[in-house]
Length: 383
View 1 (spheres, rainbow, N blue to C red):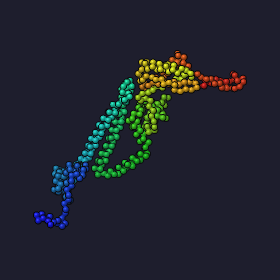
View 2 (cartoon, helix red, strand yellow):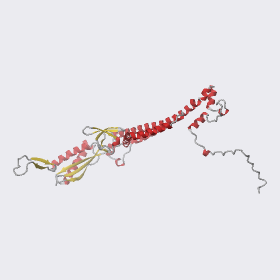
View 3 (tube, one colour):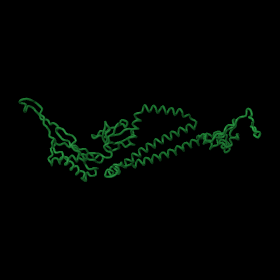
View 4 (tube, rainbow, N blue to C red):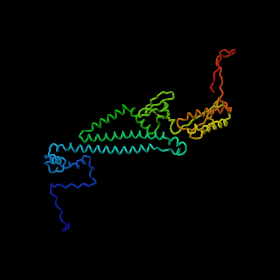
């Protein structure tokens, strides 16, 4: 039984509208760019149908009413949206694009500067190798140029992407339908992807080659079908000049492997042949002494990075023993060191009486009795 003190609930009036619940702040939608501009210009006020802005009290704070109050021109008041609101939106979009582009460019420039400083591998932190290979002005300048090149490419790409998006937003704000443009761009991208995929592949490969510093101008490389000194490195092709002077143009997308003989350090590999039965210990002692003397020679001391080594017998044949010596050198100087060391070891073998592989003579020509002097000719057989 209800309490007599309780007040009776008011009866609902038939047909009365039920008030809508007040939305919570957490459910509020994020305002769009057009809403922000409308709030700034006062165009977010609801207009009364059939009344102009200067006749409608509800639009007392609208841009249209303000323009009419200032100019007294109905045409300018009606055109205020195109004269003021849309230009303001376009300027706001362009301002955001410029600021965003500037921030991205600063970020890319800082990253490129850090890459240009470079780091030295732990194995080469000390000694002559670091001084010659990583602290030299030539290597430092090459590293900086590579970083600047990649930074320039990234800045150009960033500028194109940012202003392309800003341009589409401006066209949409001006009332143009950008859906056909997006569809056309998609179709064009697919067509370029199929028709110019080789060109795109070359450009992407060129970018990664420069970024990873696989080779640079002046390096001696082996690209498979072509080898020689690099004369130019582009995003699409690489130009080489071989030992005989031939110029090779290699598309970057076709390079499957790169053998660089100029990066970090090089090694002069010297194989000396002596006659079978020669005292190998004596041969190794002579080669080691000559290699050490070469490393101590002021003319070659700056080219040799470490103490030369004689590895020993590399191969044996019926005609010769092959003894190998190696010298770690600065890039592109391994051939000069190998020539000088070969000349010195050959002279030392002559002084010490170390025999070289002998040559066997094979007689070809007439055979059988009376063949002497019947046109038989000697021929050298390689030992």
